[in-house]
Length: 120
Image (cartoon, rainbow, N blue to C red; front, side, top):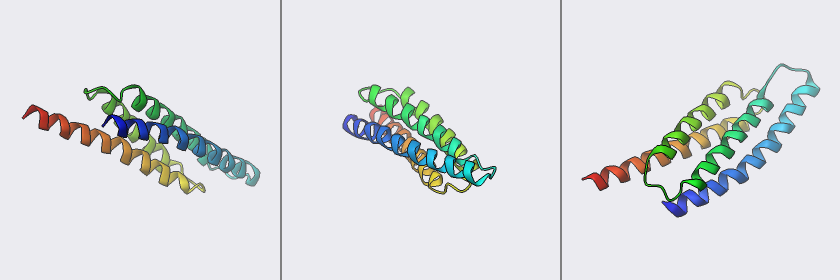
């Protein structure tokens, strides 16, 4: 689990940079078109949550407790809510929000099942 959290943490930081640039482009397109979509801003928020999740995974990769996974599960639910509510014309935000949720929920379920097996 240590190596997986390390790899996913680094991957989330790299993806966050990509999402930020994509969101800036979507925000600029929204501003130039004069529409009322906030998909660019929502994308930047999703990217910052990706950064937070990546840092938490990197900092707690050796931890055997569920605290970090619960925190990232909450952040991933926030990512999903922000992404689904404000995708607008930036449809890639739906992909990034579902990916963030799957990563957060997946690690939580995986860590929970490992702790349950150790308790038996």
